[in-house]
Image 1: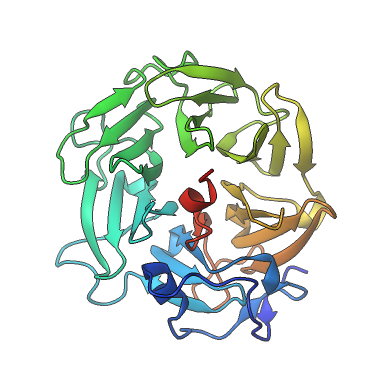
Image 2: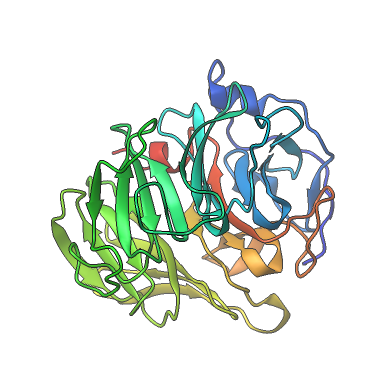
Length: 347
């Protein structure tokens, strides 16, 4: 089914711990009613999901029942003259108190404090791509590392930057600015994602040439491989030891699980009316399902790899919008802690 409809609220499988920022978000009264595609099972998600709703210039928190719990920015959230434009990736910080939002088309990365609902730090120059200090060129998938540094994939500058929040310039860099080819760690071919692994390494995805590299942030490369049969790899991350998940940001698109040799272990590439349209991120969920953004189809989906069926969907496939139940080019997401990217990756 592809047309969202009102779905009765049910209890999710798990709830965030009380007394935390995550718990406070999960306990917010719903802003909207419940909107999911018919046949969606709210129990497949462990908790609410934070979405970068890019073409609507907002972040939204949606619970498993399809109710909106939180939205940013709302009136009063932004300082006078401040903008929040085209968020395309969003991740909770390791402690769950802040949100890192990448605004690729606006050339900036913003850190948002959840409690105050204010932008507390921004790196980049809004609307002005560049490679000099204080500038980015199509930044993607920025994350705050456990050591407090902001890690930014600077796609068109073909580099990875490390920036201390509050600083006006990067503290370190991997890759060579403007040299866009596969030769890690000294050169990267348009890196569009750096995701943590359970062994302390990181997976770096390169668009050019369809590459994924397992490496440490001190520049030691363990291995590199090609995600099999993928034209435009995006945001590769680890499911479990030896199993990696990527999407093909193409039309039609696909979701692929593979190993370090580049062997495909699972592929979801539906055809016809069900085909994916430029998916940009897929993440594993605790029950073994795969959660993905289907960007140009304006929806979020959960796929059961055992049946290759969509078991949860929010958004109207092919129809963008801002009303309850609608999204417009949802390009990024993260599950609410304790199931967010960082906690779920801890050994």
